[in-house]
Image (cartoon, rainbow, N blue to C red; front, top):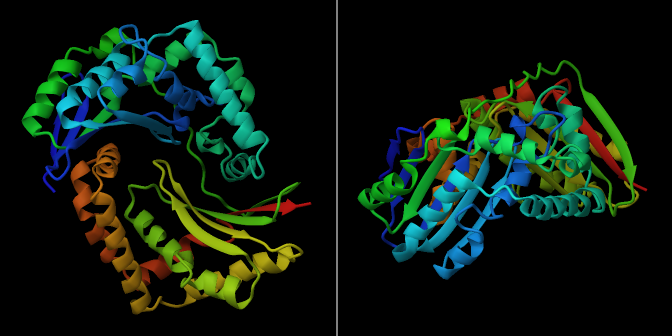
Length: 413
């Protein structure tokens, strides 16, 4: 695909790809701030700002009203590394999206009313999804066992409910001015809009935003998480429908070539009902109701997660041992070439299917730009298809070890 890129004098990075097959445009704004940028005594702020950014600006009290009047839709999400806002809008009304997004970057309204409203929303979400929900505390338990010093040790919702309830207006303003600014943002624009028109609108609405007028951008010193030298284990008992076993292995950062290998390795383990783990552990031995393997891509090192849901009355020791037994062939033998070919074909088809959606493409371009170069998206299939069986075995031997694992037994009572 033809990808255009530029960087404004104020540091804002812009990525563009024209798509005349749609009458819509996606305007995606990625801020390079997530829960990894929070301090241990002020967690949940990146997620809080996901909500605060919709609370209105000095010039536009009702963001949603203005966008909806232009037939646009929007949403946002926060993860450990980024906060992402996106708008989809008819191409003839696209300037409304640039106006609204630039305005709240420049002049977000810090009103006590907005803070209290969004604070209550986030606190209710914390209670509903992480305190009162079955398995709600699973991520807190798992991440705090895996990481001892890195901010990845708490989920994006935050470490404690009190960190949000006690947040002051001064805390909120400081966090905003440090991170929600043009020199810490990437805008990707995909859809029925030319590069010339995109540059005109970007210059018009963002060119005059001065980073120095927003204060000084500063990042916390993120502590280095030392290599894991021995297995970590945690067992809890909760009133939940079924027991769960999770085994987490630390793997390299998402920008590493080894991350792709670990990603494919997780697919070899458990990608669909024809995968090894599902056939052996669910269908044949009936030790699990379901079993899955996945990776989390993170800037400072990711995770390969194996998660199994146990039937009622299962022996948790037998079930965990069965997972370790399934890992042994990956360490000893080369995966079958036909197995790899099927996974590579599946990855290629999914990659191009995602690329057919203009909004998904805009989000992917922003993330690739954040990782170094948006143009690398066109080489992703090539990189995955070049992975060899020996590379998968080497990665399994290197990362799927007991000393590199954290085991969480979340048992039903």
